[in-house]
Picture (tube, rainbow, N blue to C red):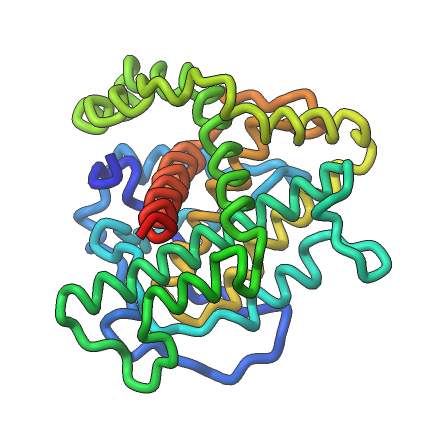
Length: 324
């Protein structure tokens, strides 16, 4: 599915400046870090026109994607991999300033949507960590050299540090599953819209042929996947008047991605944040009543499915690492 144009091409502003922390100028000079836009003539007119037509956004919405331009990036050409980039400063800012805390106590155990938001963001972090560790392992197994000076050379050690219950983030895998369940439920709710776009050939026939079998997977009809979203929805409906804070913070989560100084990491980070934000939009809407999937844009649908794929890969990898 992710090899299809509809789900692999994104117009992204890679020159946006970081607004949250001072940074020294850092350029990606390695092949693993740098990315380049595809040639203009390779951008399908259907996708270019659709993105331009859908450039508008809600001022108080869940996420604000970059305005479309002639710079489209192909995530099949530049897939997730280990680049050696250290994004710990960005993640510290996210967990300390974008997630919710009260008197220095985190909300992870609170009976509140703020706890659910923190878990979802932590799940996003866990997903990215799993891809990093998998990338280290993939390079070693392929006999490729790791970046000079990288301190991360042992995938099992890194998995234990980043993701295991005995590591730096004991809830990492639990929150990964929480985020995965949110993504699955959101895609389940968006199935009607996705299938309508297939039938109307808004999604091209080749991509539709790849998408339909995915959407027919029985997991989407398994009621157990709705546990996370049911918690989130129940908590949101108890505090509807404050849910605007969650929408604001997802927009900040998108903007902090401009502080990521590895371009490949920034590209995939922005797509993943948009995918998670789209899931929250579908599940909650503006005030806990649920969103209208018919109003979703092409890039939101693409990011939703791409991010589901990212979570699925991460969960499968963590299952493999915990059973070895």
